[in-house]
Image (cartoon, rainbow, N blue to C red; front, side):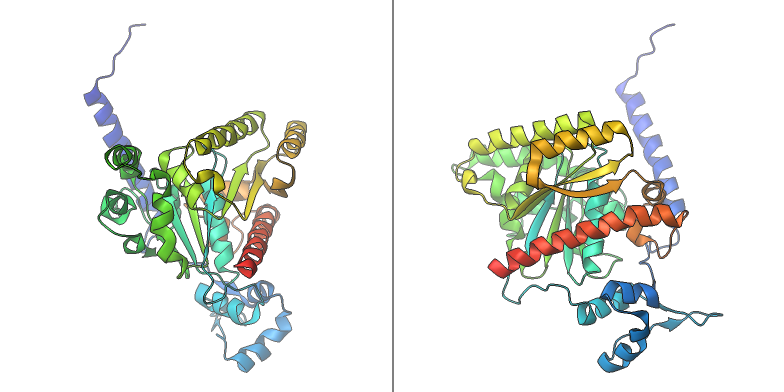
Length: 382
């Protein structure tokens, strides 16, 4: 067998061809424009979100002048829009709310390793929290732009570098308010990402060399500050690394969430992640005084086998109270949704097995409730 070398021109052609095929696949999956549509809700789903009996829906509709839903043609049932559902939750749901003068909180979702369900967990959590009455912003700090894609925006086709965090990092804007975009999902906004975010890994250390005393690790923290007034929660989706942007996200955050499968290699990688971050903090002036409201590790892609059970034991020993005990399974429902560039919350009804849908969604709902409880405690102390 002869060695067939690959030139840079060949690589350029490969990249262009692959990008063209991916664009065609995405166009086929997301037609027609707009690319993504929010789900609709039944009366039963509205009652479940608000923690009431379905029989109360009609009475409460009239009492509080709430959306009454739209009759489904050929059926006695009604359907409600996402905006209707959120209005119901905010009025009837009785969920914890942030005080008007209390700043919103920042949650960084991080892991050293890819393929651990970090981005899908970030987006599902953001959606679930809007369904609990919060106004949420996703900041995509991963140049792959997967969170941006899940927010209904193509990072290759629809995102210019000027729409990302990069102009702020270059010093063109005083904060990140310019970059916030609405999405197809009510009360969920996004600061999108594109491959141009890689430039941050050069721009930040360059500034540190040029400007004496420049704290490169607090850039994102400062840019986010004005957004805390508008949003109850800001979720930062990070790249699978300890890049300059990831360190910035972790310093900006009030809480850290690490999705981690109970797998030996994933566990070892997570231990390495925390060790390196701890060493980095030792070298950053004032960073050692940082305090988090909570740090939580959630099991993801959990399989029902002996290896998973063994590694969960190791993780409990290693992380103690930081393990929140929620187990998000390795699920066909997750893969089905992901294949359509969706999360489980994008589906108005189960796409496939109802049981698989329920098994996957229930722990995500519990995770959202857990995070909301943490937020409620921190808001009360603000």
